[in-house]
Length: 252
Image (cartoon, rainbow, N blue to C red; front, side, top):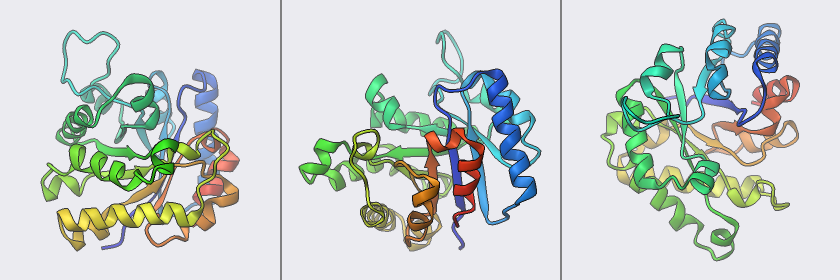
């Protein structure tokens, strides 16, 4: 089975209504002028602009939320449910991003609940994993990756696991001055695929899309995407410039 190639833009807490609409429109126009049939493009704007960005998609891209509650509904002030996302035309949801883990204390156990809720609601989870600089330097990074996978994902049935996209973020290479080489990224991606094969089987492992989420830019995307087990990128800063983002999409 051919793995999906995916480029997802995580806008984080950036843009306002006008600039979100403009950015989405510019990306849509660029994809119209220079289309790609081999890459699935996903935009993840802030919550207030999901409907606006979904409204100008014109089938050029899919829309993702940056987070989601594990609860169905109720007295959870400020939270966003899967049903709300569905009603806006959202198809994907980013779960377990390193910033959610670091700043809001999200645990693997909580994320297991969120992943399950997303799948039950026909949303595709983009589940993020990755190690800190301390964990990398102490050579614990593969153990960290294994724990993040096993706790949050490995209780899923084979069928449900097949609905998940995984994004590897080397947290130590984001905003630290350190840089992950394509070979370092590939090592972890290959290890993730090996763990999936051991837990499920080779067919499932080969069908799972693994994205790289560490400072992917137009200048390094081609080399990263050429690695055997890297199937695309979860893009941060470069996703806020239509020209850079579309250049990354066409790096395949």
